[in-house]
Length: 206
Ligand SMILES: N[C@@H](CCC(=O)N[C@@H](CS)C(=O)NCC(=O)O)C(=O)O
Image (cartoon, rainbow, N blue to C red; front, side):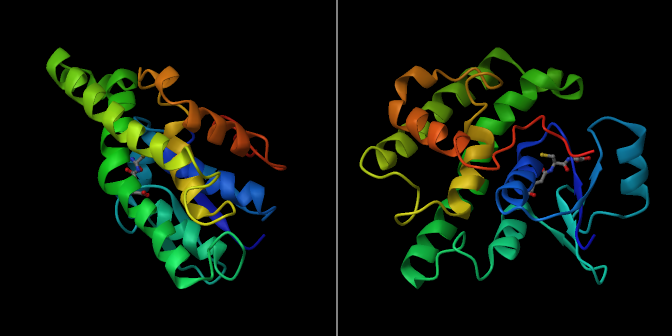
């Protein structure tokens, strides 16, 4: 076993990495640590996570890589998953930066406010309504981008698709967003779900 992944089973950021590892058929050891548990508190106390969050990928030499999208790029390096053409690669990275600085902070945050007991006090009607409106704007942007193309960047699937898939595929069920407005996103989600080796969010390795 060469790679060890510290990941949170319920988290989309961690799921991105589990999904790419599965699609690339890369073996790894999985350490699952769930939110609001003693095990995660202990891992924080032991300074297991370089930037205080999961996922973290531990390499064979013990180096620990944080940040989901950085881990995707590490795993995809020199493969078809990371576009080789500099322009297409910059476009893929652009979408991954957007995923972290726009999409995740709205789509994932609304789902987290509705899911985790420790966030319930932040889930005011005003905040939920604000996130709903902003989320629909972000999803509309993605939908219009996907209307005339199959993948987020370039003409084949890349790390940008995996990055954005994680929180988009549960935006309706967990976040309460109205996905019926976004048929191009729906088709794109279906293309990813149909890939050989695809795993679901709750397909947690033993
Ligand atoms: N920008 C980071 C965000 C990671 C993040 O926020 N991880 C959360 C779960 S989604 C986490 O580890 N929370 C555990 C904690 O705060 O104790 C990434 O993309 O990896």
